[in-house]
Image 1 (cartoon, rainbow, N blue to C red):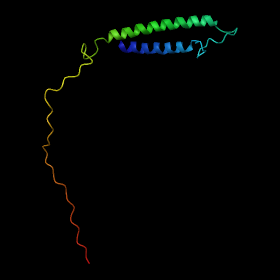
Image 2 (image 1 turned 60 degrees about the horizontal axis):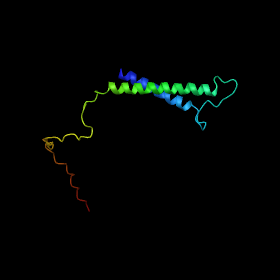
Image 3 (image 1 turned 135 degrees about the vertical axis):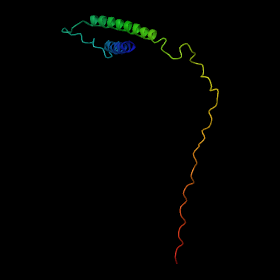
Image 4 (image 1 turned 90 degrees about the horizontal axis):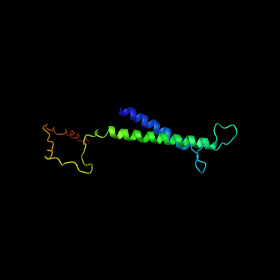
Length: 118
């Protein structure tokens, strides 16, 4: 259930970003509402109203999904109800140093060089 809501939240987020980028800003931006020709599908005002409503609906769905995910995952933490600023308790017994039980063999020494003949 949580995975489905996360995927849906991701898709709504991408759609919301796209709708916001399409809108016409005061400086022109990435808006598509600048084409005011006779053959346009909608007028500038109609496009702005549609995009504004779409943004509002997507923002509402996004907030509801975020709240649902927060409520569903409220008790999912392993340390539920613990203070996040508290430091973990120190270990009660110190760790003993590791001792080696194997015997070490001495390293092989190189054979002495033969005396040079004169």
